[in-house]
Image 1 (cartoon, rainbow, N blue to C red):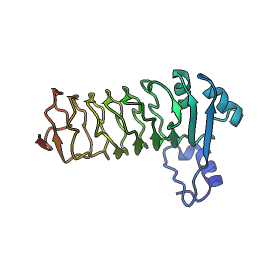
Image 2 (cartoon, one colour; image 1 turned 45 degrees about the vertical axis):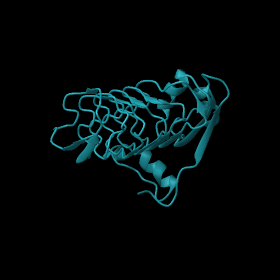
Image 3 (tube, rainbow, N blue to C red; image 1 turned 135 degrees about the vertical axis):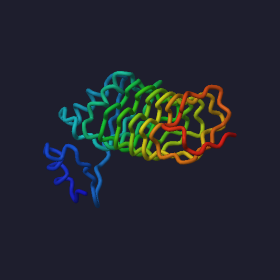
Image 4 (spheres, rainbow, N blue to C red; image 1 turned 90 degrees about the vertical axis):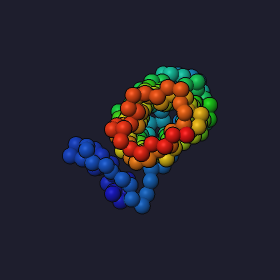
Length: 219
């Protein structure tokens, strides 16, 4: 736990602490609002705001119309902890959107986004919460190895791909949505599930859970 932003910067700059989780105590980073005037200008706007220092964007709110290039450039935010896309307009998340981004803790998606594509958050090991109200499809390995993910609403999901929540050690939904149609292989392998209720799905992958030994209740 780090008591000031100055101390945080010092620890963060030292290679000796690369594998440590630095947690602010008694303070938080200010939010940075990046207002994108035209599609494709997220990086340029951010650079002009920060003199091209990609480490300054910690709690970031993006506003405006975005394209695939804008979304891809968000991976350059090396210290990103919270990303708010509520007021951003774009058609879809790209595959591998923030994959291997180890600093991200929380993300908020716009209401129109209903698909989490393959490997979108793969290996985001510190991601704990995803605010997304309209998700209907979660593709292969979307949250693979997100070991701290605990808060995600899957009540409207109709499709869960293989290994979607593989090794999500903190994720433990008590039941899967009644409208679920596809449940991929090893979708919940290595999660915290001890008991789960599953609807009558159209497609059930082989050994959807890591050991197939947990208590399963069928609707």
